[in-house]
Amino acid sequence: MMDPIVWEWIGAALRWLHVIAGIAWIGSSFYFVHLDSSLKPRDGLPKGAYGEAWQVHGGGFYHMVKFLVAPSNMPDDLTWFKWEAYATWLSGVALLVFVYYFGAQLYLIDLSVMELSNWEAIAISAGSLILGWAIYDGLCRSPLGRSDNLLALFGFGFVVVATFVFTQIFSARGAFMQAGALMGTIMAGNVFMVIIPNQRKVVAALMKGEAPDPRFGRTGKQRSMHNNYITLPTVFVMISNHYPLAYGGSLAWLILAFLIVMGVFIRHFFNTMHKGLPAPWWTWWVAAVCALIIVALSRVTPADPAVSGNLLPSPAVAEASVDLAAASDIVMGRCAMCHTREPVWEGVTVPPKGIVLDTPAAVAAHAEQIYTIAVWTHAMPPSNVTEMPVEERRVLARWYEDMRTATR
Ligand code: HEC
Image 1: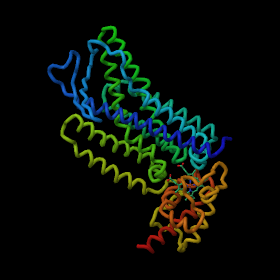
Image 2 (image 1 turned 45 degrees about the horizontal axis):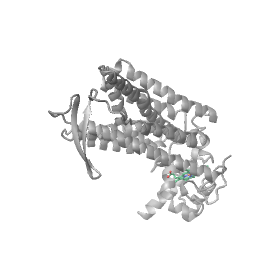
Image 3 (image 1 turned 45 degrees about the vertical axis):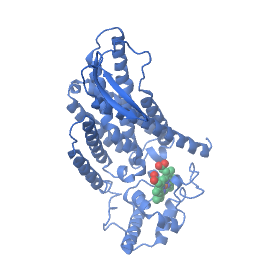
Image 4 (image 1 turned 90 degrees about the vertical axis):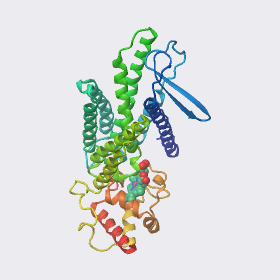
């Protein structure tokens, strides 16, 4: 095996690359949707031009003109926007392999959900990305594709159902990330398989002096709008691994559904504003209602009967009051093998995320985090590798509850 310190740094480097590529992709994609919406037709534009926009940035003025048909002389150097998308997807896949495939036991598989070997889990994960793209692409090419709204509805339903299926196969965290990877793959697939190829066909036709088939432009635009609308939820899923309340509950798939709705309405607000139309402030009400529903859904107890009863305040919380010493004993026994300065768990070489839980004082200081990550949700220990029983989580629940009432 590779040196664990080098391994850690490779993970950090991949994440850095993925975030930077994603920023470049989303940045250019938001920019062009904004530019497209803000173009205004005017008399006297060059032949074939549809509209223009004036912009100021970085000490200069830009005069943007959009041509729907070939400009009278085709420029020699045309900038294509595609590597932002490809780099984001490629670095994302590398990160998926690095974190979730190499760390399948910790992050992808939960034996209490499904007994999978590493290779089975990896095959299902990779296969479902390919299959997922094929199904989505099939929906778009089917007669449904003629109606933007109907297609959006079915695409949404498909992603939610797929997420539900993932939660029946993978660990909670693995399932959520798999859903994010599916949405990211759909977005990158749209660029690689549809938007750029269509654009090439249009350019080729224009070069030959022919009128390009308007279908190419239309489908490209449709896919591009899908990407625009699923950007916000996809990015949320990508950062959600720090928020077990988002992925750790039994209704995570429904939380994702409301996240998508929320993201779509927020995008709609900006897209409408950028067209210069009256701002649809009502969309923020929809977003706020979605946010409230998401918070409520994250309060629902896990469905597994062996696990339920963790909700507070609940009679299932341990009866006898619990002091810090007793709580620390549990944390020492189930968490400190990894969360200590010199971890003894194989493959863990530094305290994960810098969190050290090896003294009562440290346990007290991290009470909130321990509560959300190991009591309310079961995100830690990862895939319950140290076999923490539900009773111990209840004891921690009682400790936390006692502490809160004491400080109230
Ligand atoms: C097998 C080793 C292992 C055990 C046991 C373990 N953890 Fe972790 N923990 C990890 C790893 C690895 C991460 C980093 C996850 C990541 O990369 O996002 C982590 C992350 C965390 C985080 C930070 C989450 C974040 O992203 O902000 C908290 C809090 C935490 N663990 C608490 C606990 C508690 C409480 C227990 C015991 C109930 C526990 N852990 C048991 C390995 C472990």
